[in-house]
Length: 328
Ligand SMILES: Nc1nc2c(ncn2[C@@H]2O[C@H](COP(=O)(O)OP(=O)(O)OP(=O)(O)O)[C@@H](O)[C@H]2O)c(=O)[nH]1
Ligand SMILES: [Mg+2]
Ligand SMILES: [Zn+2]
Image (cartoon, rainbow, N blue to C red; front, side):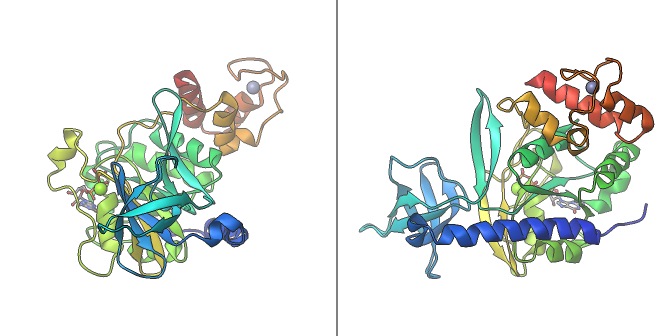
């Protein structure tokens, strides 16, 4: 299989989005609340936060004022030093974007703030869970963010339990114009192209435990190991997670947030309409079925069924859509 780089169009899409986000950021900076912002959340540990002062001083451990919402890595904050070396976060600056994980009970749990692109990391092993990528993509589309799919561990393709299925899966996303990069944190393959795509933007690495998110941080970093990585793959097989809290890293020309692996990415909090809109190729056919309330399950003159028959929509994506609907 030939290795592909990001197409000009795909990179253009990211750049365009980036421009939009940067435009917002400039606007935000002018608002009153943001004028006082003097730090960034690098990481958080329970009720404590690591704040990086914007003036370049050392990272400070801080508490946060009780009236503030849960702060996440990447948040811009107003903080002040305390007597005992522990500071206090007084206010949250504007968030130009947030990546959130829907959690049990319909609550949305923010994971990272002020990011441009979500890096959805997969690997030949562990094999991606069924429709996990589609769940991520729906969340990313709903939040107005931009995804970049990364197949890490390209050196382990021969160990994939079903390489044919994996390749076919990636081909579907490429055909939908989602950028897909194949890399190996171990051999360094593809990392130059990845670092190029990340220049000037802030991204968050997400994906199953053990796909190599922290390994990518380290491989992209120029210095010593930055993030702890899992030792034995059996650790992941037992469902243990190596990374336990998100952390922001400043690398050469870009910022990257490492996050803990997840076991499930439920979408319980979003509407059926949002799921539909989260499938770009379905959204493109909105309103084209004969019946306004078409469920796309055998009604006459259904535009989606017709598109599947014509081969313009992949049947796996349509069944993935139904699967997500069923899970709401
Ligand atoms: N062969 C190979 N192994 C890799 C590669 N990237 C990571 N690994 C290995 O995969 C295992 C898991 O890597 P991590 O970086 O800890 O994975 P993670 O996604 O950060 O996992 P969590 O922190 O639990 O979410 C480690 O044993 C790594 O050495 C790669 O490109 N090729
Ligand atoms: Mg990790
Ligand atoms: Zn229909």
